[in-house]
Image (tube, rainbow, N blue to C red):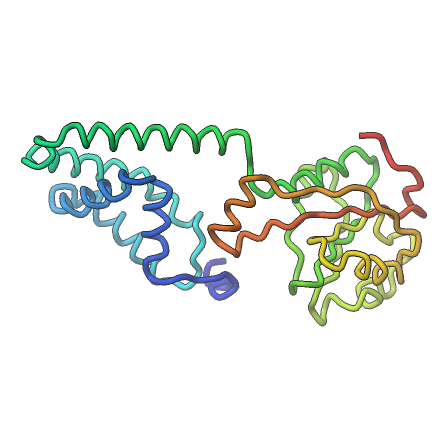
Length: 260
C-alpha cells in the first residue's frame, strides 16, 4: 500500500514527522524528550536504534502520513523521559531554577488537560461517519452515489456505520467517473441511487442539476458539517479536507423523508 500510494498524498520536508511529534508532545515536553532521546542513545541502544531507524525511514519515504509514525511514540516518550531526567538531575542550571521547571510542568499539564477535553468530546471524519449513521435509519438502502467533482475521486464511505452494505458509485472529476450519464450507463433505473451525497457545498445547485439528468426527482434531505476537531486538523494540514456532506434523496425510490 505504501509503495503503490507513495505519491498520492501531500508530502512535506524531511523534518515533517519531527515537527509533528514536537507538536503533539506539547511544549516544552517535546523538546525535552527529543533531547533526552538522543542524549542517552548509547545506554539505550537496543530500543534507540530501531526507533531512530523507523523515524529516519519514514522521514525519507515519500508517503508521509501522520498515522505511520504512531508506533514509535511510546518509545520516544520512555527513552526521552529517561534521558531528560538523568540530564536534569546532573544539571546545575535546572537545580538552580526549580521554580522555572515547576512552571513548565504546570503549563504542560494544563495544556494537555485542555486538549484532552477537546479531543474527548470531538472526533475526526464526522461528516462522513454521521452521513452513514443518518442513512442507517432508512431500511433497504441498496444504492448510493458519492459526488465530488472537485477531486479525482470521492472519499470512502464508511458503510459499516450504516449497518447495511449498499452499492456505491462515484461521480468525480475523472474520465472514468464522469459525466454522470457514463457512471450510470447500462444501469437499470431501479438501481439508480436512493441517496446522493455531495461533498463540499460549493456550486451545490449547479451540481444538483447535473445529477438530476439521471435522477430528476432529487430532493434535499440534510446537511452534515465537519466537527470542530476536523476544522483544527484541516488548519494544521490542508490534506485533512473533511468536507461538509449534503445529502439528497431520490424521491422516486424513497418517497418519504424518515423522521430521525
